Amino acid sequence: MPAKTPLIGLTLDQLTDIARQGGMPRFVGKQLSDWLYAKKVTSFDQMVNISKKNRQWLDTYYEVGRMDPALARHSQDGSAKYLFDYGHGRKIESVYIPDRDKATLCVSSQVGCRMNCYFCATGRRGFHSNLSVREIINQILSIPPAPVAGQAPMNELTNVVFMGMGEPLDNMEALLPAIEILTAPWGLAWSPKRITVSTVGKLSSLKELLERTQVHVALSVHTADSRQRESMMPVQKAWPVRDVMKLLKGYDFAHQRRLSLEYIMWRNLNDDLAHADMLVKLIDGTPCRVNLIPFNPNPGVDLVPSSEEKMIIFRNYLNSKGIICTIRTSRGQDIEAACGMLAAKDRPKVNR
Ligand code: SAH
Image (cartoon, protein in one colour):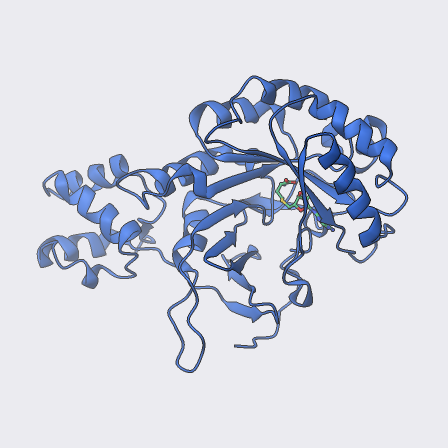
Protein backbone atom coordinates (compact mmCIF):
# COMPACT_ATOMS: atom_id res chain seq x y z
CA MET A 1 0.00 0.00 0.00
CA PRO A 2 1.46 3.41 -0.95
CA ALA A 3 2.41 5.75 1.88
CA LYS A 4 -0.29 8.18 2.93
CA THR A 5 0.11 11.82 1.92
CA PRO A 6 0.48 14.22 4.88
CA LEU A 7 -1.91 17.17 5.01
CA ILE A 8 0.16 19.48 7.20
CA GLY A 9 2.03 21.85 4.92
CA LEU A 10 -0.79 22.12 2.38
CA THR A 11 -2.51 25.40 1.58
CA LEU A 12 -6.27 26.02 1.66
CA ASP A 13 -6.49 25.60 -2.13
CA GLN A 14 -4.71 22.25 -1.97
CA LEU A 15 -6.89 21.05 0.92
CA THR A 16 -10.02 22.12 -0.93
CA ASP A 17 -8.90 20.14 -3.98
CA ILE A 18 -8.49 17.06 -1.80
CA ALA A 19 -11.96 17.51 -0.31
CA ARG A 20 -13.40 17.79 -3.82
CA GLN A 21 -11.60 14.64 -4.93
CA GLY A 22 -13.26 12.81 -2.06
CA GLY A 23 -16.67 14.06 -3.22
CA MET A 24 -16.99 16.47 -0.29
CA PRO A 25 -18.29 20.03 -0.41
CA ARG A 26 -15.66 22.78 -0.93
CA PHE A 27 -16.06 24.07 2.64
CA VAL A 28 -14.50 20.88 4.00
CA GLY A 29 -11.18 22.29 2.75
CA LYS A 30 -11.60 25.20 5.16
CA GLN A 31 -12.65 22.84 7.95
CA LEU A 32 -9.48 20.85 7.37
CA SER A 33 -7.23 23.92 7.48
CA ASP A 34 -8.97 24.99 10.66
CA TRP A 35 -8.34 21.64 12.37
CA LEU A 36 -4.76 21.40 11.16
CA TYR A 37 -3.53 24.94 11.79
CA ALA A 38 -5.86 26.76 14.20
CA LYS A 39 -6.79 23.79 16.39
CA LYS A 40 -3.55 21.87 15.82
CA VAL A 41 -5.13 18.43 15.97
CA THR A 42 -3.05 15.32 15.45
CA SER A 43 -5.63 12.84 14.12
CA PHE A 44 -8.70 12.66 11.90
CA ASP A 45 -10.79 11.42 14.88
CA GLN A 46 -10.59 14.88 16.38
CA MET A 47 -12.14 16.54 13.32
CA VAL A 48 -15.66 16.12 14.65
CA ASN A 49 -17.48 18.46 12.28
CA ILE A 50 -16.40 16.33 9.30
CA SER A 51 -18.64 13.29 8.77
CA LYS A 52 -17.33 9.90 9.81
CA LYS A 53 -17.56 8.64 6.25
CA ASN A 54 -15.50 11.53 4.95
CA ARG A 55 -12.94 11.11 7.73
CA GLN A 56 -12.64 7.46 6.80
CA TRP A 57 -12.06 8.35 3.16
CA LEU A 58 -9.39 10.90 4.19
CA ASP A 59 -7.75 8.34 6.43
CA THR A 60 -7.46 5.89 3.55
CA TYR A 61 -5.25 8.15 1.44
CA TYR A 62 -3.99 10.86 3.80
CA GLU A 63 -2.52 11.39 7.23
CA VAL A 64 -2.47 14.51 9.41
CA GLY A 65 1.31 14.40 9.33
CA ARG A 66 2.32 15.79 12.72
CA MET A 67 5.72 14.64 13.97
CA ASP A 68 6.68 15.16 17.60
CA PRO A 69 10.25 16.08 18.50
CA ALA A 70 12.41 13.03 19.18
CA LEU A 71 14.33 14.68 22.00
CA ALA A 72 14.28 17.77 24.16
CA ARG A 73 16.96 19.50 26.19
CA HIS A 74 16.10 22.18 28.68
CA SER A 75 18.46 25.03 29.54
CA GLN A 76 18.98 26.59 32.94
CA ASP A 77 17.70 29.85 31.46
CA GLY A 78 14.28 28.47 30.45
CA SER A 79 15.04 27.98 26.77
CA ALA A 80 14.76 24.51 25.27
CA LYS A 81 16.16 22.76 22.24
CA TYR A 82 14.16 20.17 20.30
CA LEU A 83 15.50 17.63 17.89
CA PHE A 84 13.24 16.49 15.06
CA ASP A 85 14.22 13.29 13.29
CA TYR A 86 12.68 13.49 9.83
CA GLY A 87 14.21 10.18 8.76
CA HIS A 88 17.10 9.14 6.49
CA GLY A 89 19.60 11.02 8.66
CA ARG A 90 17.57 14.22 8.34
CA LYS A 91 17.83 15.66 11.83
CA ILE A 92 17.14 19.29 12.60
CA GLU A 93 16.79 21.42 15.70
CA SER A 94 14.45 24.16 16.87
CA VAL A 95 14.97 26.37 19.90
CA TYR A 96 12.21 27.68 22.17
CA ILE A 97 13.13 30.98 23.82
CA PRO A 98 10.77 32.44 26.44
CA ASP A 99 11.29 36.09 27.32
CA ARG A 100 8.82 37.77 29.71
CA ASP A 101 5.46 37.78 27.88
CA LYS A 102 7.00 36.51 24.64
CA ALA A 103 7.95 33.02 23.48
CA THR A 104 9.98 32.78 20.29
CA LEU A 105 10.68 29.68 18.28
CA CYS A 106 13.88 29.62 16.28
CA VAL A 107 13.09 27.29 13.37
CA SER A 108 15.25 25.48 10.84
CA SER A 109 14.69 25.70 7.11
CA GLN A 110 17.22 23.13 5.85
CA VAL A 111 19.09 20.04 7.02
CA GLY A 112 22.56 21.54 7.08
CA CYS A 113 23.38 24.58 4.98
CA ARG A 114 25.05 25.40 1.68
CA MET A 115 26.36 28.81 2.69
CA ASN A 116 29.49 27.48 4.37
CA CYS A 117 30.13 30.41 6.73
CA TYR A 118 33.43 29.69 8.44
CA PHE A 119 32.24 30.34 11.99
CA CYS A 120 28.92 28.48 11.94
CA ALA A 121 28.49 24.91 13.22
CA THR A 122 25.61 24.22 10.81
CA GLY A 123 27.60 25.44 7.81
CA ARG A 124 30.61 23.40 8.77
CA ARG A 125 28.60 20.21 8.63
CA GLY A 126 27.68 20.82 4.99
CA PHE A 127 24.34 20.56 3.23
CA HIS A 128 22.02 17.59 3.31
CA SER A 129 18.62 18.66 2.00
CA ASN A 130 15.85 21.21 2.07
CA LEU A 131 13.01 20.94 4.55
CA SER A 132 9.52 20.62 3.09
CA VAL A 133 6.71 23.04 3.97
CA ARG A 134 5.35 20.37 6.27
CA GLU A 135 8.68 19.92 8.05
CA ILE A 136 8.94 23.67 8.67
CA ILE A 137 5.34 24.15 9.82
CA ASN A 138 5.52 21.00 11.92
CA GLN A 139 8.15 22.63 14.16
CA ILE A 140 5.77 25.51 14.89
CA LEU A 141 2.74 23.27 15.46
CA SER A 142 4.58 20.86 17.78
CA ILE A 143 6.22 23.32 20.16
CA PRO A 144 5.57 23.83 22.96
CA PRO A 145 4.62 20.16 23.40
CA ALA A 146 1.61 19.18 25.46
CA PRO A 147 2.24 19.93 29.15
CA VAL A 148 3.89 17.22 31.22
CA ALA A 149 2.66 16.61 34.77
CA GLY A 150 4.94 18.17 37.36
CA GLN A 151 6.60 20.50 34.88
CA ALA A 152 6.04 24.26 34.64
CA PRO A 153 3.74 25.02 31.69
CA MET A 154 5.36 26.64 28.66
CA ASN A 155 3.89 29.69 26.94
CA GLU A 156 2.30 29.49 23.51
CA LEU A 157 4.50 30.87 20.75
CA THR A 158 4.24 34.57 20.03
CA ASN A 159 7.08 34.82 17.47
CA VAL A 160 8.96 32.77 14.93
CA VAL A 161 12.46 33.52 13.70
CA PHE A 162 14.02 31.65 10.79
CA MET A 163 17.39 31.59 12.51
CA GLY A 164 17.87 27.89 13.05
CA MET A 165 19.71 25.55 10.73
CA GLY A 166 19.92 26.48 7.07
CA GLU A 167 19.61 29.49 4.82
CA PRO A 168 15.88 30.19 4.43
CA LEU A 169 16.33 32.07 1.15
CA ASP A 170 18.00 28.98 -0.30
CA ASN A 171 14.69 27.14 0.18
CA MET A 172 12.12 29.60 -1.15
CA GLU A 173 9.90 26.76 -2.45
CA ALA A 174 9.11 25.83 1.14
CA LEU A 175 9.69 29.18 2.89
CA LEU A 176 7.01 31.13 1.00
CA PRO A 177 4.19 28.58 1.47
CA ALA A 178 5.22 28.19 5.13
CA ILE A 179 4.90 31.96 5.62
CA GLU A 180 1.55 31.85 3.81
CA ILE A 181 0.26 29.14 6.17
CA LEU A 182 1.51 31.10 9.17
CA THR A 183 -0.12 34.38 8.14
CA ALA A 184 -3.25 33.43 6.14
CA PRO A 185 -6.66 33.86 7.83
CA TRP A 186 -7.33 30.16 7.06
CA GLY A 187 -3.94 29.18 8.54
CA LEU A 188 -2.44 30.25 11.85
CA ALA A 189 -3.55 33.84 11.10
CA TRP A 190 -0.43 35.40 12.56
CA SER A 191 0.57 38.95 11.79
CA PRO A 192 3.75 39.02 9.65
CA LYS A 193 5.14 41.26 12.40
CA ARG A 194 5.59 38.11 14.46
CA ILE A 195 7.91 36.54 11.89
CA THR A 196 11.55 37.30 11.10
CA VAL A 197 13.53 35.73 8.27
CA SER A 198 17.29 35.85 8.71
CA THR A 199 19.57 35.63 5.70
CA VAL A 200 23.21 35.84 4.70
CA GLY A 201 21.93 38.10 1.91
CA LYS A 202 21.07 35.74 -0.92
CA LEU A 203 20.27 38.57 -3.28
CA SER A 204 18.72 36.39 -5.98
CA SER A 205 15.80 35.49 -3.67
CA LEU A 206 15.64 38.50 -1.37
CA LYS A 207 13.57 40.64 -3.74
CA GLU A 208 10.93 37.93 -3.96
CA LEU A 209 10.74 37.67 -0.17
CA LEU A 210 10.41 41.45 0.13
CA GLU A 211 7.71 41.64 -2.56
CA ARG A 212 5.65 38.62 -1.61
CA THR A 213 5.65 38.88 2.18
CA GLN A 214 5.63 41.52 4.90
CA VAL A 215 7.84 39.66 7.36
CA HIS A 216 10.74 41.32 9.16
CA VAL A 217 14.18 40.79 7.69
CA ALA A 218 17.45 40.15 9.52
CA LEU A 219 20.66 40.38 7.53
CA SER A 220 23.77 38.60 8.75
CA VAL A 221 26.37 41.28 8.03
CA HIS A 222 29.04 40.46 10.65
CA THR A 223 31.56 42.80 9.04
CA ALA A 224 31.27 45.68 6.61
CA ASP A 225 34.83 45.11 5.46
CA SER A 226 34.25 43.31 2.14
CA ARG A 227 37.55 41.48 2.05
CA GLN A 228 37.15 40.24 5.61
CA ARG A 229 33.55 39.22 4.91
CA GLU A 230 34.59 37.37 1.80
CA SER A 231 37.14 35.38 3.80
CA MET A 232 34.47 34.17 6.23
CA MET A 233 31.24 34.17 4.21
CA PRO A 234 31.52 32.80 0.67
CA VAL A 235 28.18 34.43 -0.18
CA GLN A 236 29.98 37.78 -0.25
CA LYS A 237 31.67 36.80 -3.55
CA ALA A 238 28.39 36.25 -5.38
CA TRP A 239 26.34 38.92 -3.61
CA PRO A 240 28.34 41.64 -1.88
CA VAL A 241 26.61 43.00 1.22
CA ARG A 242 26.77 46.49 -0.27
CA ASP A 243 24.49 45.37 -3.12
CA VAL A 244 22.16 43.70 -0.65
CA MET A 245 21.88 46.94 1.35
CA LYS A 246 21.22 48.84 -1.89
CA LEU A 247 18.24 46.59 -2.60
CA LEU A 248 16.96 46.86 0.99
CA LYS A 249 17.12 50.66 0.80
CA GLY A 250 14.32 50.57 -1.76
CA TYR A 251 11.84 49.09 0.76
CA ASP A 252 10.04 50.66 3.68
CA PHE A 253 11.60 49.64 6.97
CA ALA A 254 10.52 52.75 8.83
CA HIS A 255 6.98 51.63 9.66
CA GLN A 256 5.50 48.17 10.18
CA ARG A 257 8.37 46.17 8.80
CA ARG A 258 11.75 45.98 10.52
CA LEU A 259 15.24 45.42 9.26
CA SER A 260 17.89 44.19 11.68
CA LEU A 261 21.53 43.73 10.94
CA GLU A 262 23.29 40.95 12.80
CA TYR A 263 26.87 41.47 13.76
CA ILE A 264 28.87 38.71 15.50
CA MET A 265 31.77 40.19 17.43
CA TRP A 266 35.21 38.60 17.21
CA ARG A 267 38.19 39.75 19.22
CA ASN A 268 40.63 41.88 17.21
CA LEU A 269 38.85 41.14 13.95
CA ASN A 270 35.78 43.31 13.58
CA ASP A 271 35.31 44.88 17.00
CA ASP A 272 37.20 48.20 16.77
CA LEU A 273 35.82 51.61 15.95
CA ALA A 274 37.25 51.54 12.42
CA HIS A 275 34.93 48.58 11.78
CA ALA A 276 32.09 50.39 13.50
CA ASP A 277 32.64 53.27 11.09
CA MET A 278 32.54 50.94 8.10
CA LEU A 279 29.23 49.62 9.39
CA VAL A 280 27.84 53.15 9.77
CA LYS A 281 28.82 53.84 6.14
CA LEU A 282 27.23 50.61 4.96
CA ILE A 283 23.98 51.48 6.75
CA ASP A 284 24.08 54.97 5.26
CA GLY A 285 20.89 56.14 6.95
CA THR A 286 18.80 53.03 6.11
CA PRO A 287 16.28 52.55 8.94
CA CYS A 288 17.43 49.48 10.81
CA ARG A 289 18.63 48.23 14.16
CA VAL A 290 21.90 46.47 14.79
CA ASN A 291 22.12 43.35 16.97
CA LEU A 292 25.57 42.65 18.29
CA ILE A 293 25.94 38.91 18.86
CA PRO A 294 28.61 37.50 21.13
CA PHE A 295 30.50 34.84 19.17
CA ASN A 296 29.71 31.32 20.36
CA PRO A 297 32.89 29.29 19.92
CA ASN A 298 32.56 26.13 17.85
CA PRO A 299 35.01 23.26 17.67
CA GLY A 300 37.64 23.76 15.00
CA VAL A 301 36.99 27.49 14.64
CA ASP A 302 39.97 29.57 15.75
CA LEU A 303 38.04 32.75 16.46
CA VAL A 304 37.66 34.35 19.87
CA PRO A 305 34.66 36.30 21.21
CA SER A 306 35.10 40.03 21.84
CA SER A 307 35.16 41.23 25.40
CA GLU A 308 31.96 42.65 26.82
CA GLU A 309 33.74 45.96 27.22
CA LYS A 310 34.57 46.12 23.50
CA MET A 311 30.99 45.27 22.63
CA ILE A 312 29.70 48.07 24.82
CA ILE A 313 32.09 50.61 23.27
CA PHE A 314 31.01 49.45 19.78
CA ARG A 315 27.34 49.70 20.70
CA ASN A 316 27.73 53.15 22.23
CA TYR A 317 29.55 54.36 19.14
CA LEU A 318 26.71 53.22 16.87
CA ASN A 319 24.17 54.79 19.24
CA SER A 320 26.11 58.07 19.07
CA LYS A 321 25.64 57.95 15.28
CA GLY A 322 21.89 57.64 15.75
CA ILE A 323 21.75 53.89 15.08
CA ILE A 324 19.68 51.69 17.40
CA CYS A 325 22.03 48.97 18.56
CA THR A 326 21.66 46.31 21.20
CA ILE A 327 23.80 43.48 22.48
CA ARG A 328 21.98 40.19 22.17
CA THR A 329 22.19 37.95 25.17
CA SER A 330 22.93 34.42 24.08
CA ARG A 331 20.38 31.96 25.38
CA GLY A 332 20.73 28.22 25.73
CA GLN A 333 24.51 28.08 25.65
CA ASP A 334 24.55 25.21 28.13
CA ILE A 335 22.56 23.06 25.71
CA GLU A 336 24.33 24.16 22.52
CA ALA A 337 21.24 26.03 21.43
CA ALA A 338 22.76 29.48 20.99
CA CYS A 339 23.25 31.25 17.63
CA GLY A 340 25.39 29.24 15.24
CA MET A 341 25.61 26.18 17.49
CA LEU A 342 22.87 24.07 15.95
CA ALA A 343 24.25 20.99 14.29
CA ALA A 344 21.85 18.19 15.31
CA LYS A 345 25.00 16.15 15.47
CA ASP A 346 24.72 14.01 18.54
CA ARG A 347 22.02 12.35 20.49
CA PRO A 348 21.40 14.98 23.12
CA LYS A 349 20.54 13.44 26.44
CA VAL A 350 16.94 13.86 27.45
CA ASN A 351 16.52 15.95 30.55
CA ARG A 352 12.87 16.64 30.93
N1 SAH B 1 21.42 31.39 7.27
C1 SAH B 1 20.70 32.43 7.94
C2 SAH B 1 19.96 31.87 9.12
C3 SAH B 1 20.84 31.38 10.26
S1 SAH B 1 20.58 32.51 11.50
C4 SAH B 1 21.67 33.55 8.33
O1 SAH B 1 22.86 33.34 8.25
O2 SAH B 1 21.21 34.64 8.66
C5 SAH B 1 21.80 32.21 12.60
C6 SAH B 1 22.54 33.46 12.97
O3 SAH B 1 23.59 33.05 13.85
C7 SAH B 1 23.22 34.14 11.78
O4 SAH B 1 23.30 35.52 11.95
C8 SAH B 1 24.60 33.52 11.87
O5 SAH B 1 25.58 34.23 11.17
C9 SAH B 1 24.81 33.51 13.36
N2 SAH B 1 25.90 32.63 13.78
C10 SAH B 1 26.43 31.60 13.09
N3 SAH B 1 27.43 31.03 13.80
C11 SAH B 1 27.53 31.73 14.96
C12 SAH B 1 28.36 31.61 16.12
N4 SAH B 1 29.27 30.66 16.21
N5 SAH B 1 28.19 32.51 17.10
C13 SAH B 1 27.25 33.46 17.02
N6 SAH B 1 26.42 33.60 15.98
C14 SAH B 1 26.55 32.75 14.95
